[in-house]
Length: 124
Image (cartoon, rainbow, N blue to C red; front, side, top):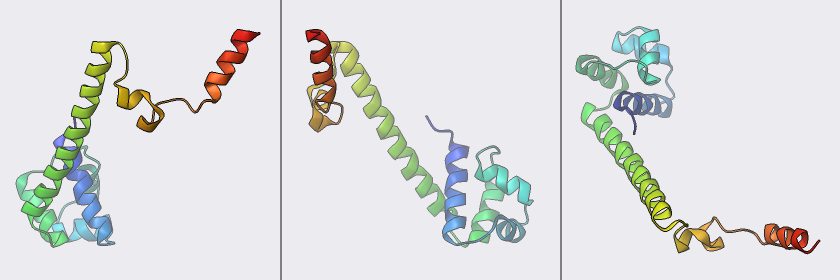
């Protein structure tokens, strides 16, 4: 599960990079130290709502739009985690992979070369 401060930081960094702006430019406009903004972007520090508002103003974006992007990212990550948990549960319940994952079409099957090698060794 993701830590919200990390997703907020990644989102802010993404917006800044899409605008082709430097940390120095945004930190100056937001009146926050360059080092602290860097820590926020890397998810090491959790910004207050006032500081987030100042960063958003400096970036020329609405705080609600940043939170919407954060929400979308978290939703995608949760779906991926839920799918992984479902596949893990299906595998442990049956002792094998679900049929869709056990075939080459599912992406986890063998290419055929491994099977030939095993047969050749068994025959020897």
